[in-house]
Image (cartoon, rainbow, N blue to C red; front, side):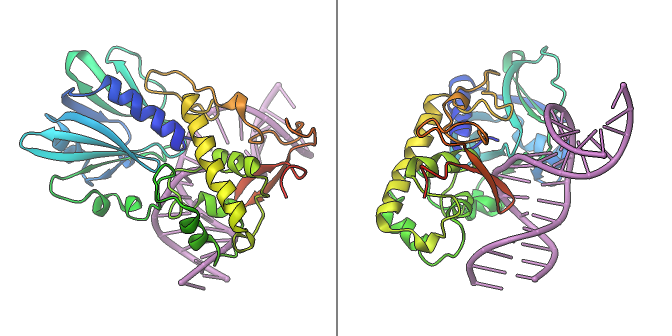
Length: 280
DNA sequence: AAGTTTCCCTGATTGC
DNA sequence: TGCAATCAGGGAAACT
């Protein structure tokens, strides 16, 4: 499940490998992957001939600036649960769940592989704001690495809410980029139970939580993403974060800090892992 | 209106 | 052994 660190890992890889490369054409093997424009043929037509000026990230969205002189447009990608972007030679045998192929010069290819078919791509026409085509972007809250993620901001978003803090952390309209793994890890590092009601959090706890969020995301990026969920970077290499997890996916195993057994509960339909001794 | 549930999907795992 | 039920989860839509 690609979260911010995994998406950031992919972004950096794409910026190393695809910069200034020109799209010569493409094939869509599963049309629902293309969210916009509604015609798959128009999508391929629109992007063909343009060159990649750079990859950006907003939350878990990837945005490539495409230059088709003198115009520039945007290619948006969301990996959702199982999406992968792989930079391969066109002769590379197709992966089982290949959904979209973008052909570049020199027989190179950017391949979108996505087992569960939740991933999406958009081509946003030049002169159009990306948020108006990629609706999810308009709803995103602050980036965890932005100076806008202050204790005051978090307090203002949390203090009125009766939701569990874990559920709030997964809400992309508050903080953009956290998912189930790093939310659990951040709560563990903060010593806060996932079931804690947002409104009950003290300012000191919010400060600890804010710091922990930034720390776990930085650790995830430094490790090149998590090993969970078939995550691969653009070169097809798995990340290293899994072995470092304090609580995620460790129910029944001993807490690395206190030796207690890690527990699991379900909040808003998502598994939450925690240590009832370290978190309270 | 805020908060919860459902849905989309496939492969691995669990249970009878 | 074999098949069916369950689980996994990002985000949007449908619901309460």
